Length: 103
Image 1 (tube, rainbow, N blue to C red):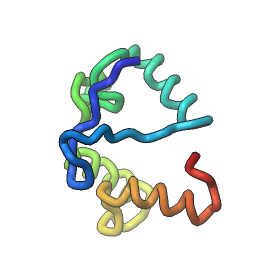
Image 2 (cartoon, helix red, strand yellow; image 1 turned 90 degrees about the vertical axis):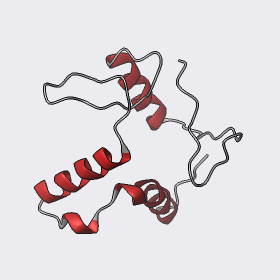
Image 3 (tube, helix red, strand yellow; image 1 turned 180 degrees about the horizontal axis):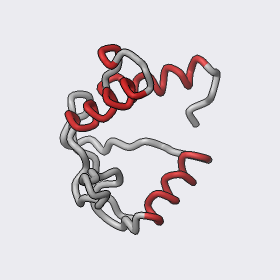
């Protein structure tokens, strides 16, 4: 399934082939998502408008952060304690704390 190549960000160089290895359940979940939304190209995760229509582009980092804060508040948590910027690092840290191998 072709998807856009990863964009460079503060931890990668523009000419670096950045990738993430996914196995087992994450692979199944990703395949199910791509199949159910009929995504064959473009961004894997995309914005959704107020009517539930899937957009072509990925949500902006600011939009992801806003969604996270709203969901935290809706769950009765202090939204100020949550930031989308920390999600990837938190995921890997929690994985390591639980002794789950990354490969």
